[in-house]
Structures are given as C-alpha cells and as structure tokens.
Image 1 (cartoon, rainbow, N blue to C red):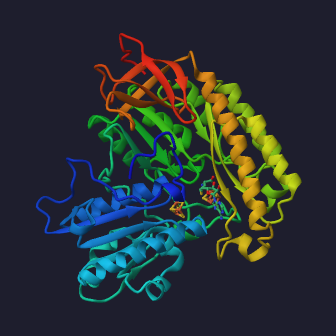
Image 2: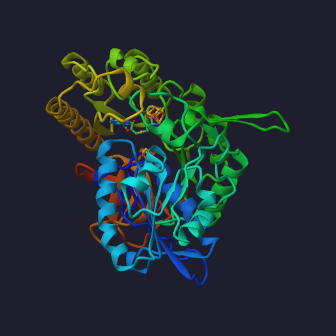
Image 3: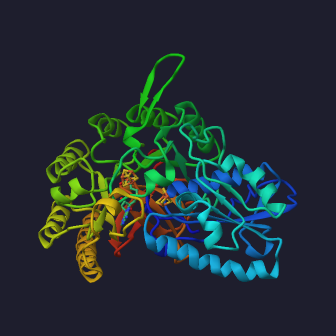
Length: 480
Ligand code: SAH
Ligand code: SF4
Ligand code: F3S
C-alpha cells in the first residue's frame, strides 16, 4: 500500500487493497518458519489494526511478507462501509481461490468489518475461507490459526467493551519512517442511520492516555516526526484514571502528545461536528506542532437530511462550528465527507449541500453515493428512493464543486512560505522530495541535500490539482 499522501481519514475503494509491506527492520519474527501476507481495506484505523495483527503474529513465529507466493497464511482486513467495498473484497477472494487450489494447505482468513458484519455466514458464502475474525478478537488469532491448521473452520467475532490493544506495539507496515498512525479509541456510539460502523466495531471505548503517550514517545525516539491520532470520533475521547479519579479529555490528550517534542507534529482524525470543542481549537492554537487541519464530515447541507441521518446537528450548527474554527485558527485546512442521494433527498436538499460547500470552501472532500447497508437504521426505516442515475449526477456536481474549491485553495498558496516535514522522494522523480504543509497539502520540491524527517521552509511557486510545487529557502529551518 502506498502511503495515503495528504489524505488522513479515508481510503476510497478505488485506492484500497494493496499488500502491506513491513518496514525493513521489522519483518516480524526472527527466522520465521511461516509467513503471513496481509492485505488491508477501508479506513486508516483498519490499516492500523493490520499493524496490530502483524505484531501479534510476529510474536507467534510468523514473518510478514509482501509476497503472496511466500505466504502460508493470507489475511484480508476488510471494510463494510459501502456495498462496493465488499464487492471488491469478494472479487479479490476469487483470485485467491486458484492459489488455494495449487496449495491446499494455504490458509485464508477474513478480518475486520466485513467479517464482523457477516460472521459465520462468510464461511458458507466463501468456501475457501478458513478463518473469520472480528476487530476485537485479534488476540485470539494464534489460537484460531492453530485450529484452522487442523482442518476446522475458526470463527471469533465477539465484540468487546474494553479491548483497545493498548499494550501492543504495532509493527509499522509500509512505513516511510516519518509519519505514523496511533489509534486512541475504538468503536462508535453515534448511531448515524446510514452507517454500519457501530455494528462492526461495537461500543466506543478510549485507550489509556499513558499508553498513547508512550507509543508516540517511542515513535519519536525511533525518528518519526508526525503522529496522527485516530478514532471514529476523536472529540468524544474520555478516560478516567480509576486510581486518581482524574479525567483526560481529547484536548488534554492532544496537549500531552504535543508536549513530547516541538519537533513532533500531531494530527488527528476524525472530528464530529457535534463534539469538537473550543478547548480543542484553543489547544491547537497554543501548540505550533499541532497541525492546523481539521477533517469535519458534514454529510449533507440540508438540516432535514441531517436529521434523517441522525447526525444531531443542523446546517446552521455546522456552519457555526466552521466559523469558530476560522476565528480561532484563521489558517486552518478544512476537509469533509459528503453523501449524495440519501433517502428522500430532493433537488432542494442537494442544492443546500452545494451552497454549504461554497460557504465552507473545503480544501478536500471524500464524496460518496449513498449505499444502503443491511441492518442500519436507514435500511430498516427509510426507502433508498433516490434513483442511481440521480445519485450519480448529484455526486458529480458535488465532485465538480469540490474540485473548484480545492483548486482555488491550491492557487491561494502560491507565493506563501510554508513549513514542510519531508516524507521522502516524490512519486514522480527521484530528484524531488515531497512532504506536507501544516494544512496537509502535499508539496514537491528539488531534493538538493535535504532528507526525509527534516523540516524545511518552502516557498510555494506553483501547483497542480493535488500538489503544490515549491523551492526550499536556505538555510533550512530546524524548528517547526
Ligand atoms: N466517523 C466518521 C466517518 C466514518 S465512515 C464520521 O462520523 O464522520 C467515513 C465516511 O463514509 C462517512 O463520513 C460517510 O461520508 C461515508 N459513509 C458511511 N456510510 C455510508 C453509506 N452507507 N453510504 C455512503 N457513504 C457512507
Ligand atoms: Fe458512522 Fe456516524 Fe460513527 Fe461516524 S460517527 S462512524 S458516520 S456512526
Ligand atoms: Fe473502517 Fe470500513 Fe470498518 S471504514 S471502521 S474499515 S467499515
């Protein structure tokens, strides 16, 4: 999987599903007798879960391999968010079928959200699958693999109220050695009517802040210079220390992580518009190393649709939050998620989404056609009544609007001087390096003697639709 440059929360189906490659110094167990190949789909949290799985397996004698032919065990960490995501995974499974025919002792396991959604049904539907393991059951993987090796099918899809894998140090897969993701909570307690996540990930629970700070400190000591704190709804992070009775809110956690070093950049995702607080915004303002970038999914610009979605905010409430962000953090990057064609959406509702986009002027958005998910409140209560061609046309109009603002925001950067954390060589040329600005925009610039992990001041000289072009001002700045 190539790193998801500039995109923090969400892997769209089109970009999903490449094998994970362990960092060179971290290939799992020493002299492993068996090898595991892991392929990941879905959101960044799912990718982070694959790193936890890799850690568990490497402690049980497995090496992690990017090479399918070398694998004794194939694990697919799946996503269930839209029907298309599941279709892609099923297609991939048929490709594994021929491999399994050649090598009957090869084990194939399905992990993650699709495993949780379909449970043992998957074994009936996909005959080649040997293991089905839900997101809270990864500690039982070694035992389940042992069971599957005896020829039995093995399933564990129990959800937990406590599991956060707090004590497990993820094996960093596909790492650039500079940026890393750290999960701070699991599950979700919001019941957005369109969403399958509460069913696949279970109840929301926060992870012990000490273990989060420790993991971030270790990453910094290993040379990482950016951490992204992950959760479905980071603003509802909340931890009570049972000994001291002291609470830690998300703003306080953010502060603790930011205090590790001014050279460690801190990002986070995703924020829920109903929960993001002024305290978080002021904390961001106080620490130059907390990146000024917020992913604030709106889903729709129509209050009526937002109510049907059970998002618990109105159009006006959302716009007030955005205004507050602009007041407290005038130079903050802003992105969002939008769903086109939710149940009963009229042309007027759709126009409200477009007009909200003009007000918010997003730097970037992930945009989707509504896809009904079995078992969700929307599937049970409402009709998926917007015809596919109408959904498609509305989505295209939303995409067109997003491009206009993204392009305009890129153009506005030209002439500015930005601090960039170098992530490595640019995709197109070895003569260029790339890294992101505080506001999460990717910049490409001539390599000279600079190297990854350094902070540099870059003058922005031009742009394409997705990338800024620039030149480093010398001498390079050492500070964030
Ligand atoms: N926790 C995040 C979102 C996680 S899912 C939040 O609350 O914003 C990522 C995005 O997928 C959602 O923001 C939504 O835009 C999209 N999505 C979720 N379920 C969907 C569905 N059934 N159909 C289409 N898009 C969906
Ligand atoms: Fe799904 Fe809503 Fe939870 Fe996000 S906040 S994961 S959209 S239920
Ligand atoms: Fe993530 Fe997809 Fe599950 S978005 S939480 S992997 S359904």
